[in-house]
Image 1 (cartoon, rainbow, N blue to C red):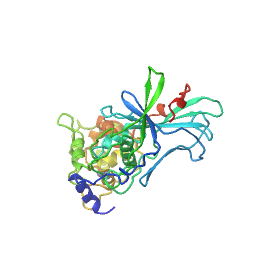
Image 2 (image 1 turned 90 degrees about the vertical axis):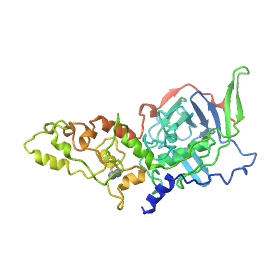
Image 3 (image 1 turned 60 degrees about the vertical axis):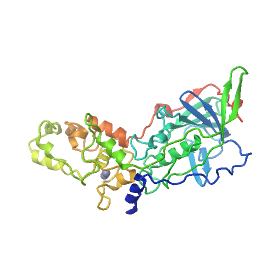
Amino acid sequence: MTAQMHDKAGYFDAGASTDMASPLEGERPQFEQPVFTVTELSDRLIFRPRGFTLHSKEGTLFNLTHSGHSLQVTEHLEGDSTKSPQLGDETYPAWEVMKQGSGPHNVPYFRNPDLGPYENWSYANKLAFKVIWKSKSDGQWRVRMLQRHNIGDMLAPQPGALVSYAHGTALYAYLMRATWPSKPDFLPYFGRAVLHKATRNSSQQNIQLDVVSGTLANLQGPRFSLKVMRVAMRGTVNEPLFDNVDGPWAALDWQWLDDPSCWDPSAGGSVSNLGHIKDDIKKRKACDFCYIHTQSKDRSKDVTCERYGQHNRCKACVARGLPCSWTATYKIFGSDFMKESGNERTGGTLHKKAVALLIKQPYNTAATTSAIIPDPGFQSVEV
Ligand SMILES: [Zn+2]
Ligand SMILES: [Zn+2]
Protein backbone atom coordinates (compact mmCIF):
# COMPACT_ATOMS: atom_id res chain seq x y z
CA MET A 1 0.00 0.00 0.00
CA THR A 2 1.22 3.45 -0.81
CA ALA A 3 0.43 6.89 0.46
CA GLN A 4 -1.48 7.51 -2.77
CA MET A 5 -4.27 5.35 -1.51
CA HIS A 6 -5.44 8.01 0.87
CA ASP A 7 -5.24 10.63 -1.85
CA LYS A 8 -7.29 8.36 -4.09
CA ALA A 9 -10.01 8.35 -1.47
CA GLY A 10 -10.10 12.13 -1.57
CA TYR A 11 -10.07 12.06 -5.35
CA PHE A 12 -13.25 10.00 -5.43
CA ASP A 13 -14.76 12.01 -2.62
CA ALA A 14 -14.51 15.08 -4.78
CA GLY A 15 -16.74 13.38 -7.29
CA ALA A 16 -14.19 13.28 -10.11
CA SER A 17 -15.40 11.09 -12.90
CA THR A 18 -13.90 8.95 -15.58
CA ASP A 19 -15.53 8.62 -18.96
CA MET A 20 -16.86 5.14 -19.08
CA ALA A 21 -17.98 4.84 -22.69
CA SER A 22 -17.01 1.48 -24.12
CA PRO A 23 -14.57 1.48 -27.01
CA LEU A 24 -16.86 -1.17 -28.50
CA GLU A 25 -19.93 1.05 -28.30
CA GLY A 26 -21.33 1.61 -31.76
CA GLU A 27 -18.96 -0.90 -33.31
CA ARG A 28 -20.89 -4.00 -32.45
CA PRO A 29 -21.56 -6.11 -35.52
CA GLN A 30 -25.27 -6.54 -36.25
CA PHE A 31 -24.96 -10.32 -36.42
CA GLU A 32 -23.60 -10.73 -32.90
CA GLN A 33 -25.23 -13.60 -31.08
CA PRO A 34 -27.41 -12.72 -28.12
CA VAL A 35 -25.71 -13.55 -24.87
CA PHE A 36 -28.76 -14.08 -22.69
CA THR A 37 -32.43 -14.80 -22.86
CA VAL A 38 -34.21 -12.53 -20.41
CA THR A 39 -37.42 -13.31 -18.58
CA GLU A 40 -39.09 -10.54 -16.63
CA LEU A 41 -40.94 -11.23 -13.39
CA SER A 42 -42.60 -8.64 -11.16
CA ASP A 43 -39.61 -8.09 -8.91
CA ARG A 44 -36.68 -9.51 -10.89
CA LEU A 45 -35.18 -10.33 -14.26
CA ILE A 46 -33.79 -13.75 -15.09
CA PHE A 47 -30.88 -13.92 -17.49
CA ARG A 48 -30.17 -17.30 -19.03
CA PRO A 49 -27.14 -17.99 -21.15
CA ARG A 50 -27.45 -21.02 -23.43
CA GLY A 51 -27.56 -24.35 -21.70
CA PHE A 52 -24.68 -26.74 -22.23
CA THR A 53 -23.36 -30.16 -21.40
CA LEU A 54 -20.89 -29.91 -18.60
CA HIS A 55 -17.55 -31.22 -19.76
CA SER A 56 -14.98 -29.32 -17.75
CA LYS A 57 -13.51 -30.94 -14.69
CA GLU A 58 -13.20 -27.53 -13.02
CA GLY A 59 -16.99 -27.28 -13.16
CA THR A 60 -17.14 -23.98 -15.00
CA LEU A 61 -20.79 -22.95 -14.86
CA PHE A 62 -20.51 -19.41 -16.14
CA ASN A 63 -17.69 -17.71 -17.97
CA LEU A 64 -17.93 -14.17 -19.24
CA THR A 65 -15.02 -12.41 -20.85
CA HIS A 66 -15.53 -8.92 -22.13
CA SER A 67 -13.27 -5.98 -22.82
CA GLY A 68 -10.34 -7.82 -21.30
CA HIS A 69 -12.06 -8.63 -18.03
CA SER A 70 -13.41 -12.00 -17.10
CA LEU A 71 -15.80 -13.36 -14.58
CA GLN A 72 -16.03 -17.04 -13.91
CA VAL A 73 -18.32 -19.05 -11.67
CA THR A 74 -16.94 -22.48 -10.94
CA GLU A 75 -18.14 -25.18 -8.62
CA HIS A 76 -16.30 -28.24 -7.40
CA LEU A 77 -18.10 -31.24 -8.79
CA GLU A 78 -18.18 -32.83 -5.39
CA GLY A 79 -20.50 -35.55 -4.24
CA ASP A 80 -22.94 -36.92 -6.76
CA SER A 81 -25.54 -35.55 -9.11
CA THR A 82 -27.92 -34.89 -6.22
CA LYS A 83 -25.61 -32.14 -4.92
CA SER A 84 -24.20 -30.50 -8.02
CA PRO A 85 -24.05 -31.06 -11.77
CA GLN A 86 -21.64 -33.75 -12.94
CA LEU A 87 -19.64 -34.22 -16.11
CA GLY A 88 -22.01 -34.94 -18.96
CA ASP A 89 -25.08 -33.42 -17.27
CA GLU A 90 -27.32 -30.97 -19.14
CA THR A 91 -26.64 -27.69 -17.34
CA TYR A 92 -28.54 -24.40 -17.36
CA PRO A 93 -27.08 -21.51 -15.39
CA ALA A 94 -29.04 -18.34 -14.72
CA TRP A 95 -28.51 -14.96 -13.10
CA GLU A 96 -31.39 -13.46 -11.19
CA VAL A 97 -31.29 -9.69 -10.83
CA MET A 98 -33.61 -7.85 -8.50
CA LYS A 99 -35.19 -4.82 -10.14
CA GLN A 100 -34.49 -1.34 -8.87
CA GLY A 101 -36.72 -0.70 -5.89
CA SER A 102 -36.88 -4.41 -5.04
CA GLY A 103 -34.03 -4.49 -2.55
CA PRO A 104 -31.28 -7.08 -2.39
CA HIS A 105 -31.66 -10.72 -3.40
CA ASN A 106 -32.14 -12.98 -0.40
CA VAL A 107 -29.41 -15.33 -1.68
CA PRO A 108 -26.89 -12.94 -3.24
CA TYR A 109 -24.06 -14.57 -5.19
CA PHE A 110 -21.67 -11.71 -4.44
CA ARG A 111 -21.71 -11.39 -0.70
CA ASN A 112 -21.25 -7.81 0.38
CA PRO A 113 -21.79 -6.68 3.95
CA ASP A 114 -24.52 -4.05 4.36
CA LEU A 115 -22.31 -0.97 4.62
CA GLY A 116 -19.81 0.05 1.98
CA PRO A 117 -18.11 3.25 0.88
CA TYR A 118 -19.57 3.46 -2.64
CA GLU A 119 -22.99 4.79 -3.43
CA ASN A 120 -23.72 1.79 -5.67
CA TRP A 121 -22.52 -0.71 -3.04
CA SER A 122 -25.89 -2.40 -2.61
CA TYR A 123 -26.28 -3.25 -6.30
CA ALA A 124 -23.84 -6.15 -6.02
CA ASN A 125 -26.23 -7.92 -3.66
CA LYS A 126 -29.06 -7.74 -6.20
CA LEU A 127 -27.59 -10.64 -8.14
CA ALA A 128 -28.07 -14.34 -7.52
CA PHE A 129 -26.69 -17.31 -9.45
CA LYS A 130 -28.79 -20.38 -10.00
CA VAL A 131 -27.93 -23.61 -11.74
CA ILE A 132 -30.46 -26.12 -13.03
CA TRP A 133 -29.29 -29.49 -14.26
CA LYS A 134 -30.59 -32.78 -15.52
CA SER A 135 -28.71 -35.71 -14.10
CA LYS A 136 -27.45 -38.24 -16.61
CA SER A 137 -27.57 -40.95 -13.95
CA ASP A 138 -31.12 -40.64 -12.57
CA GLY A 139 -32.82 -38.40 -15.12
CA GLN A 140 -34.00 -35.91 -12.45
CA TRP A 141 -33.96 -32.15 -12.80
CA ARG A 142 -32.47 -30.26 -9.87
CA VAL A 143 -31.89 -26.65 -8.92
CA ARG A 144 -29.42 -24.96 -6.61
CA MET A 145 -28.34 -21.43 -5.77
CA LEU A 146 -24.64 -20.76 -5.52
CA GLN A 147 -22.87 -18.20 -3.36
CA ARG A 148 -19.30 -17.03 -3.59
CA HIS A 149 -16.89 -18.86 -1.27
CA ASN A 150 -13.93 -16.48 -1.09
CA ILE A 151 -15.58 -13.49 0.43
CA GLY A 152 -12.65 -11.61 1.96
CA ASP A 153 -10.69 -11.17 -1.30
CA MET A 154 -9.49 -7.73 -2.20
CA LEU A 155 -9.26 -7.00 -5.90
CA ALA A 156 -6.49 -4.44 -5.69
CA PRO A 157 -5.01 -2.21 -3.00
CA GLN A 158 -7.78 0.34 -3.44
CA PRO A 159 -10.30 1.41 -0.83
CA GLY A 160 -13.43 -0.69 -0.87
CA ALA A 161 -12.16 -3.01 -3.61
CA LEU A 162 -13.67 -6.21 -2.30
CA VAL A 163 -13.98 -8.61 -5.23
CA SER A 164 -17.61 -9.12 -4.21
CA TYR A 165 -18.26 -5.43 -4.76
CA ALA A 166 -16.21 -4.86 -7.90
CA HIS A 167 -17.37 -7.93 -9.82
CA GLY A 168 -20.94 -7.70 -8.58
CA THR A 169 -21.48 -4.09 -9.65
CA ALA A 170 -19.71 -4.64 -12.97
CA LEU A 171 -21.86 -7.65 -13.79
CA TYR A 172 -24.99 -5.80 -12.67
CA ALA A 173 -24.20 -2.94 -15.05
CA TYR A 174 -23.44 -5.41 -17.82
CA LEU A 175 -26.68 -7.35 -17.44
CA MET A 176 -28.83 -4.25 -17.03
CA ARG A 177 -27.21 -2.59 -20.06
CA ALA A 178 -26.39 0.33 -17.86
CA THR A 179 -23.49 2.66 -17.43
CA TRP A 180 -22.19 4.24 -14.29
CA PRO A 181 -21.45 7.95 -14.72
CA SER A 182 -18.06 7.49 -13.10
CA LYS A 183 -15.98 4.57 -12.04
CA PRO A 184 -12.90 3.89 -9.96
CA ASP A 185 -10.11 2.38 -12.01
CA PHE A 186 -10.31 -1.00 -10.31
CA LEU A 187 -13.91 -1.64 -11.30
CA PRO A 188 -13.92 -4.21 -14.09
CA TYR A 189 -15.97 -3.16 -17.04
CA PHE A 190 -17.93 -5.76 -18.91
CA GLY A 191 -19.45 -3.56 -21.59
CA ARG A 192 -22.99 -4.31 -22.65
CA ALA A 193 -24.76 -7.56 -23.26
CA VAL A 194 -26.84 -8.37 -26.31
CA LEU A 195 -30.05 -9.46 -24.70
CA HIS A 196 -33.14 -11.31 -25.76
CA LYS A 197 -36.22 -10.99 -23.64
CA ALA A 198 -38.63 -13.91 -23.44
CA THR A 199 -42.28 -13.23 -22.78
CA ARG A 200 -45.09 -15.76 -22.66
CA ASN A 201 -47.76 -14.96 -25.20
CA SER A 202 -50.82 -16.63 -23.68
CA SER A 203 -53.15 -16.06 -26.63
CA GLN A 204 -50.78 -17.81 -29.01
CA GLN A 205 -49.56 -20.27 -26.37
CA ASN A 206 -45.92 -19.68 -27.08
CA ILE A 207 -42.83 -17.90 -25.91
CA GLN A 208 -41.95 -14.77 -27.77
CA LEU A 209 -38.40 -13.50 -27.97
CA ASP A 210 -37.56 -9.87 -28.52
CA VAL A 211 -34.22 -8.15 -28.63
CA VAL A 212 -34.02 -5.79 -25.72
CA SER A 213 -33.08 -2.40 -27.03
CA GLY A 214 -31.80 0.60 -25.22
CA THR A 215 -30.60 0.92 -21.70
CA LEU A 216 -32.61 -0.74 -18.98
CA ALA A 217 -31.30 1.34 -16.16
CA ASN A 218 -29.44 4.56 -15.73
CA LEU A 219 -27.50 4.26 -12.54
CA GLN A 220 -25.70 6.39 -10.02
CA GLY A 221 -21.96 6.19 -10.17
CA PRO A 222 -19.64 4.36 -7.84
CA ARG A 223 -18.56 7.51 -6.03
CA PHE A 224 -16.35 6.86 -3.05
CA SER A 225 -17.40 8.64 0.09
CA LEU A 226 -15.85 8.27 3.49
CA LYS A 227 -18.30 10.92 4.61
CA VAL A 228 -21.27 8.69 3.93
CA MET A 229 -19.71 5.90 5.95
CA ARG A 230 -18.88 8.29 8.76
CA VAL A 231 -22.51 9.35 9.04
CA ALA A 232 -23.80 5.78 8.77
CA MET A 233 -21.42 4.52 11.43
CA ARG A 234 -22.16 7.31 13.88
CA GLY A 235 -25.86 6.55 13.72
CA THR A 236 -28.51 8.99 14.85
CA VAL A 237 -29.22 10.77 18.11
CA ASN A 238 -31.94 8.27 18.90
CA GLU A 239 -29.90 5.34 17.74
CA PRO A 240 -26.20 6.02 18.15
CA LEU A 241 -23.86 3.34 16.81
CA PHE A 242 -20.09 3.63 17.01
CA ASP A 243 -18.02 6.09 19.07
CA ASN A 244 -15.03 8.13 17.89
CA VAL A 245 -15.72 7.49 14.20
CA ASP A 246 -12.86 8.77 12.03
CA GLY A 247 -11.43 10.51 15.10
CA PRO A 248 -8.13 10.35 16.99
CA TRP A 249 -6.23 7.09 16.59
CA ALA A 250 -6.81 4.48 19.32
CA ALA A 251 -8.63 6.97 21.53
CA LEU A 252 -10.68 4.62 23.68
CA ASP A 253 -12.54 5.84 26.70
CA TRP A 254 -12.01 3.62 29.76
CA GLN A 255 -14.01 5.61 32.32
CA TRP A 256 -16.88 3.15 32.09
CA LEU A 257 -14.67 0.56 33.86
CA ASP A 258 -15.30 2.48 37.08
CA ASP A 259 -19.05 2.66 36.53
CA PRO A 260 -20.78 -0.44 37.95
CA SER A 261 -23.87 0.18 35.82
CA CYS A 262 -21.87 -0.33 32.62
CA TRP A 263 -20.54 -3.80 33.17
CA ASP A 264 -20.53 -6.78 35.47
CA PRO A 265 -17.05 -7.98 36.40
CA SER A 266 -18.48 -10.90 38.39
CA ALA A 267 -19.85 -12.37 35.16
CA GLY A 268 -16.28 -13.28 34.32
CA GLY A 269 -15.64 -15.10 37.57
CA SER A 270 -13.66 -13.83 40.55
CA VAL A 271 -13.66 -10.12 41.31
CA SER A 272 -10.91 -10.45 43.92
CA ASN A 273 -8.44 -9.06 41.46
CA LEU A 274 -10.53 -6.33 39.88
CA GLY A 275 -7.54 -4.14 39.06
CA HIS A 276 -5.99 -6.98 37.09
CA ILE A 277 -9.23 -7.62 35.16
CA LYS A 278 -9.44 -3.95 34.25
CA ASP A 279 -5.82 -3.92 33.09
CA ASP A 280 -6.55 -6.94 30.92
CA ILE A 281 -9.55 -5.24 29.30
CA LYS A 282 -7.46 -2.15 28.64
CA LYS A 283 -5.04 -4.21 26.57
CA ARG A 284 -7.37 -3.81 23.63
CA LYS A 285 -5.48 -2.14 20.78
CA ALA A 286 -7.83 -2.78 17.86
CA CYS A 287 -10.39 -0.52 16.22
CA ASP A 288 -14.03 -1.66 16.27
CA PHE A 289 -13.93 -3.35 12.87
CA CYS A 290 -10.80 -5.37 13.69
CA TYR A 291 -11.88 -6.03 17.27
CA ILE A 292 -15.34 -7.25 16.30
CA HIS A 293 -13.79 -9.26 13.50
CA THR A 294 -11.38 -11.13 15.72
CA GLN A 295 -14.00 -11.73 18.43
CA SER A 296 -16.76 -12.96 16.18
CA LYS A 297 -17.65 -16.29 14.67
CA ASP A 298 -18.95 -14.40 11.63
CA ARG A 299 -15.46 -13.37 10.61
CA SER A 300 -14.28 -14.52 7.18
CA LYS A 301 -10.66 -14.52 8.33
CA ASP A 302 -8.60 -12.94 11.04
CA VAL A 303 -7.42 -9.39 10.64
CA THR A 304 -4.85 -7.44 12.58
CA CYS A 305 -5.30 -3.79 13.38
CA GLU A 306 -2.23 -2.03 12.05
CA ARG A 307 -2.12 1.73 11.75
CA TYR A 308 -1.81 3.07 8.20
CA GLY A 309 1.11 5.51 8.27
CA GLN A 310 0.23 8.47 10.46
CA HIS A 311 -3.41 8.47 9.37
CA ASN A 312 -6.15 7.85 11.90
CA ARG A 313 -7.09 4.64 10.09
CA CYS A 314 -5.86 1.07 10.15
CA LYS A 315 -4.80 -0.86 7.06
CA ALA A 316 -7.80 -3.18 7.22
CA CYS A 317 -10.24 -0.27 7.30
CA VAL A 318 -8.42 1.65 4.55
CA ALA A 319 -8.60 -1.40 2.30
CA ARG A 320 -12.33 -1.71 2.90
CA GLY A 321 -13.03 1.98 2.60
CA LEU A 322 -14.13 2.31 6.22
CA PRO A 323 -13.23 4.92 8.78
CA CYS A 324 -11.91 3.44 12.03
CA SER A 325 -14.08 3.77 15.10
CA TRP A 326 -13.33 3.20 18.76
CA THR A 327 -16.33 2.25 20.83
CA ALA A 328 -16.34 1.21 24.49
CA THR A 329 -16.16 -2.57 24.74
CA TYR A 330 -19.27 -2.88 26.93
CA LYS A 331 -21.36 -0.99 24.38
CA ILE A 332 -20.44 -3.46 21.65
CA PHE A 333 -20.66 -6.69 23.58
CA GLY A 334 -23.18 -5.82 26.27
CA SER A 335 -22.69 -5.15 29.98
CA ASP A 336 -22.05 -8.84 30.70
CA PHE A 337 -19.40 -9.19 28.02
CA MET A 338 -17.08 -10.88 30.57
CA LYS A 339 -19.38 -13.91 30.42
CA GLU A 340 -18.40 -14.63 26.86
CA SER A 341 -15.27 -16.53 26.02
CA GLY A 342 -12.41 -14.37 24.80
CA ASN A 343 -12.46 -15.78 21.29
CA GLU A 344 -16.09 -15.57 20.39
CA ARG A 345 -18.11 -12.81 21.94
CA THR A 346 -21.62 -12.60 20.64
CA GLY A 347 -23.57 -10.59 23.21
CA GLY A 348 -24.79 -7.04 22.88
CA THR A 349 -27.24 -5.50 20.46
CA LEU A 350 -24.59 -3.23 18.98
CA HIS A 351 -22.43 -6.24 18.23
CA LYS A 352 -25.22 -7.93 16.29
CA LYS A 353 -25.88 -4.75 14.34
CA ALA A 354 -22.19 -4.11 13.72
CA VAL A 355 -21.60 -7.62 12.43
CA ALA A 356 -24.50 -7.33 10.01
CA LEU A 357 -23.45 -3.90 8.80
CA LEU A 358 -19.70 -4.27 8.54
CA ILE A 359 -18.67 -7.89 8.59
CA LYS A 360 -21.38 -10.42 7.86
CA GLN A 361 -21.46 -11.48 4.24
CA PRO A 362 -24.86 -13.06 3.66
CA TYR A 363 -25.06 -16.79 3.21
CA ASN A 364 -28.21 -18.84 2.94
CA THR A 365 -27.52 -22.50 3.69
CA ALA A 366 -31.04 -23.72 2.94
CA ALA A 367 -31.10 -22.12 -0.49
CA THR A 368 -27.71 -23.49 -1.51
CA THR A 369 -28.70 -27.13 -1.11
CA SER A 370 -30.23 -28.79 -4.14
CA ALA A 371 -33.90 -29.54 -4.70
CA ILE A 372 -35.68 -31.70 -7.26
CA ILE A 373 -37.87 -29.79 -9.73
CA PRO A 374 -40.12 -30.79 -12.63
CA ASP A 375 -38.75 -30.54 -16.17
CA PRO A 376 -38.47 -26.76 -16.69
CA GLY A 377 -38.96 -27.13 -20.45
CA PHE A 378 -36.03 -24.99 -21.47
CA GLN A 379 -36.19 -26.16 -25.09
CA SER A 380 -39.16 -23.89 -25.70
CA VAL A 381 -37.23 -20.74 -24.86
CA GLU A 382 -33.92 -21.64 -26.45
CA VAL A 383 -32.87 -19.12 -29.06
ZN1 LIG B 1 -8.35 -1.89 12.67
ZN1 LIG C 1 -9.94 0.28 11.60
